[in-house]
Length: 193
Image (cartoon, rainbow, N blue to C red; front, side, top):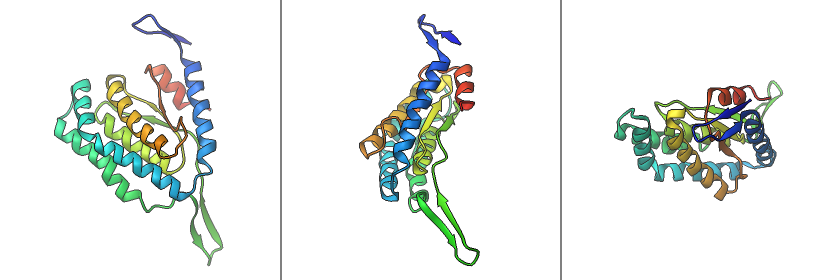
């Protein structure tokens, strides 16, 4: 269905979601071949880029949403980047991750596919940082549906971690988002085959 925005721009929402999913699937194919070292390098760079911008992102989130306290948002952004990185950096997410020789069982980590990331207006930037890092740590591209009242700050957080990921060797469309948020677009993304 087409949707008309305030600026009289008509958007084919289904085509937009299909395009995001197609690009994410191309990224997925490339990410499937990444080894643990490359994955960890990419996620580390994402964390450091987000940590570097934790204060401006906090300011943007408070100004755009009118919710929360700047210092609290800054702490959440630090937590979502630095603390999460330190808690996952040694987690094995590629290939054989566990072997029970007694039972003859081997656990092998594989990407599950494109992840849909829905984010709230209450913690928009920290949630975006966290979800993007976790998705890429498991070699899954992510497409975000941001809360409309936190679109700008969330997109900036996603841009920061995406650009860092690409600079570290991730594919171009490893982190994407719906540019024109709506309930319809979010629903189509969540239910996309």
